[in-house]
Amino acid sequence: MNDPAIKPETLTAFALGELDADQAARIAEHVHQNPALAEQVESIRRTAAAITDALQSSADSVPSLSGEHHQKIQNALEQTMSIQHEPHRHIWLPICIAAAIALLIGGAVWMQMGVTDKPQRTHVPDGDPTLAQVEPAEASSHTGLKELEIELPNPVFVGTPKDIPANVNIDRARHGMPREPFFAPTDVHDVSLNKPVTSSDPYPIIGDLDLVTDGDKEALDGRYVELAPGKQWVQIDLQKPQQIYAVVIWHNHMDPRVYRDVIVQLSNDPKFESDVKTVFNNDNDNSSGFSGGGNYEYFESFEGQLVPVDGLTARYVRLWSNGSTSDDQNHYTEVEVFGREPQAK
Ligand SMILES: [Ca+2]
Ligand SMILES: [Ca+2]
Image (tube, rainbow, N blue to C red; front, top):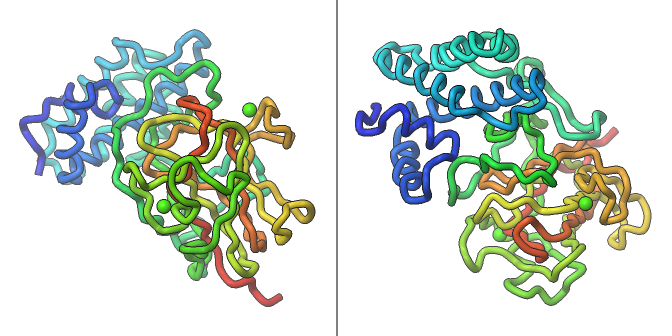
C-alpha cells in the first residue's frame, strides 16, 4: 500500500537526505511500515549514486546533484507513482530516472545503469583484491555458499550526508547505497558473541569492553564503550582459531561520523607481534604508521562496516581507530566476526 500523503518531491528529498530531522523521522516511519515506499527510496538512492558517479567521471567540477538533476529525478518519480498500480512498477523507476538524466548528460548514466531493473549486485571488496570476492550469480549456483545474514540495529538517522568533507576519502560511487549481499559458506556464523575483549585502553572512559561483543548494536546511550583519544585498539579473543570470512564493525552510529585510521588485523599471537594479517586499512596517509592503506573511509550507519576476509584462520581479531570526524575518542557499539571451524585439509 502506498501512502498518498507523501508527495513525490518529499520522498525524493527524504531519499537524498535533504529533509530536516523532524520531517525525516516522520517519513522514515512511513517508509519503515511500507515495503513499496522503502523500495522506491532505495531506487532513488541507487539512481542518485549512479548519476553522481557518472557526472563526476564526465565533469570534474560537479560535486553532487544539482537542483536541475534533482528536478529530473522528481519528475521521473511522479511519473512512476502515477503508474503505481502496475504490478512491476519497480522496474520502471530506475529506468525512468536514468532516461531523464541521460538526456541531460548524454547517456553516461544510461550506460552506467546498464538499463536493468535492479543494479548490478557484484560484491567488490574494498582494497585487497585477494580478499573474498564472489559474484551473487556465481554464488547462487555454487553449492555451499549462502548470503550472510547480519542482524541490523535500528537506524537513528536517515539519508547520507550531502556535503562530504574534503578530507574524507569515501567511495563516492557507493555513497548512500545499501550494502550488497555478501556470500559465505553455509556454516559461517557469528563466532564472536560474548567472547572476551581487551584493549589498549583497559579502563574505558564510558562503558565496559564487554559491550563490544554483547550482541547489542543499538545506537543508544549506554550501548557503546568509549576509549581514550588517539590511536587505540580493541581485541577479541575467539578462544580458538576460526576460519574467518567477515568482520562487521559498528563504532558509534548515532550520527554519520567517519572514524579515522580504521585497521583490522588477524593473528594467532595475542600480542600481535608475529603472524599478523591486515585485512582492512583505510589510513591512507599512514598517520597511524602501519603503511599500506588502500581501503576507503566510510560514514557510520546502522549497517555497520563489513570487512571481507578470505577464509583466513586466526584466534584473535584486533581493530584500530584514531578518533573520528566528531571527536578524538574511539567508540565501539559492537563487532561481529563471522567464521567457522577450520576445515580439515
Ligand atoms: Ca554491543
Ligand atoms: Ca590517517
